[in-house]
Amino acid sequence: MVMSRLQKIPVVEEKKGNPLARVFDDLVRFCRSRSLFILHYCTGCGAIELPPAMTSRFDMERLGIQPMVSPRQADILLITGYVSIKTLKRVILTYEQMGSPKYVVGICSCTVNGGMYWQSYATAKKLDEYMPVDLYIAGCMPRPEAVISGLQKLMDRIKNGEADSWQDYYRNYDYYLGNQQKLFGEDWQTPTDIITEAKHYELMGEGTLGQHTRLLEQHQQPLEALEMRLGHKLKEPVE
Amino acid sequence: MAPIELFIELTLMPLIAFIVGMMMVLMMRRIAARIQRRIGPPFFQPLYDIVKLHGKRTQVSHGLIHDIGIVMAMGGYIAAETLLPVPGMNGIAEKGGLITLLYLMMIPSLGLALGVGQCANPNGSIGIARALTAMLAYDIPLVIVIFGVAYAAGTTNLVEIIATQQAGGFATWGVVEMPLLAIAGLIAMHASLGKQPFEIYIAPAEIATGPMVEMSGKYLGGLFVMQCFQLYTTSVLYVSLFLGGGTTWFDFLIKSFLVLAIPVSIAYLFPRYRTEDLLRLMWKWPVILGLIGLAFVM
Image 1 (cartoon, rainbow over the protein chains, first blue to last red):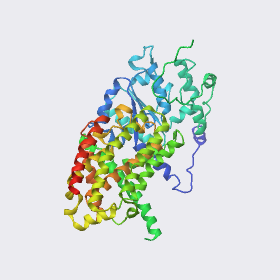
Image 2 (image 1 turned 45 degrees about the horizontal axis):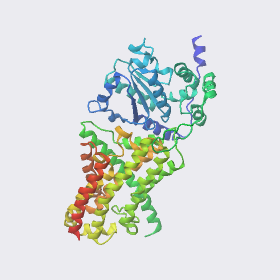
Image 3 (image 1 turned 120 degrees about the horizontal axis):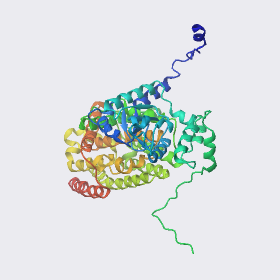
Image 4 (image 1 turned 90 degrees about the vertical axis):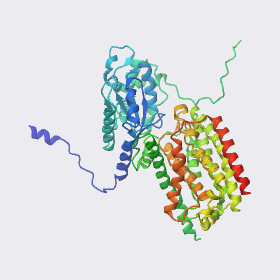
């Protein structure tokens, strides 16, 4: 019985051929793991543990981790604390603007299950219902050592090619969008067109399209370039 | 010179500049770390950053001019490297001269202005306006200094300027013969690096790194490469003008790293000036020093 089950386990054979064929991929993966720019979205008390982790006491730059200031430049979105519903909108906008591969790290128990804000009507309880989270660092609040050892774990996963949950956002966009619509209302729309991006990067999955994306397409308005102008001019009253 | 030899030199000079520039970026980050009592990044960190940024899956372009702007920003410096003589290689330095070099060193800022303009990000626009203002501020003392050196040497040919200094030994170095111009040049060089007291256009806490705000992936990677070239070009130009260039690679590299260490060590001790303060400061002290130095040379 057990043996017959064991025989059914598919065996993935190592691809034979040129052993140098994957050298470049391995190099890029290694460099990705050794150079992480973090964008810290500090919402709660967990933010207080980040300065010692970055500055002279624990010095994250030893590991190649350094803070960046705009979502375009960053690799890691670090969310340190509770996300209220209003904040979550900004977090999602920020997340969608980041360049892939991107990783989300939730720090403190508030991002895991709401923490001490469990009974609050105004906070989003579980962060991974709204965006794929690579790593949780639990604690209230986790010490800088815990933050750094968590990030080291993330570095190992990136090096081994396991940290690819950013693809999950494209493959299961309908699920995430559904949860977002439940909170923000049915006319929720972000400036980033995830479905077109998924098509472009060939990341369409079974869960990309669904009933929630159909709802989005009904009211989605195409993006227009911002008007370039100096100063604001009030509209004159129409007579 | 045989065309094949020239071709090899023109390929090697930017390549060496890139490698040395990466080590200069490393030195800058290590000095910053030591001043803040940290350990600092590992040896290959600049390389990791550049490879990672070019290996990103998503590359957000904002249009054709955005792409061209980054190429201009890098290309201006790559062209400038071929005009900077290094030990054993002169490239096209004899035909180019100082004035062409000065023009080529302005191209990156203009290319960046074009590229950032298409991003339509207000932070980027403010940043690039400040960068061009800063260029206006430090270019006046820089031009006075370069004019003074060229006048004293009687030529704008960088190879001849270096050869004269090397032939006469330490007593004929620019820094001994024209100390006032050397000091003015050091201040102008510090401002052209855009480091801390003069860091008006990056300003991460205020305008979110200014020109870099919308750059991601290979665009930011291109700017990282540009920074390597920028550090190399500025310090090597200073070494060629005032410290007699280099007879061997050993003393050439020691001189250029030491020259760069001066502004970098000062940089991480200071906050920064406002734009108008930078303009007032750059148009007052280095210009006065430069003009007095120029009077001594004439």
